Length: 88
Image (tube, rainbow, N blue to C red; front, top):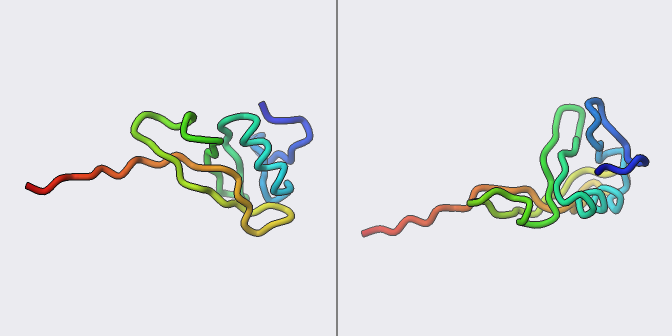
């Protein structure tokens, strides 16, 4: 669950531009997976590791704006695995 001291955007999601990088990263690690706002109209689901992704997905490193860093490593996002097709 989100901590009481986190900066929340409208809609109740954590708002990374008002948080320190360490606080944002800690929230993702503590919750395992969390939807966070990264701007007034932008948000995504960030995860601690691939255990929070669906079958057929893998992780991609994610950086977001934070109060103290323009590019803060927050954890990962889940993306579809590339399907390798064999040519016959």
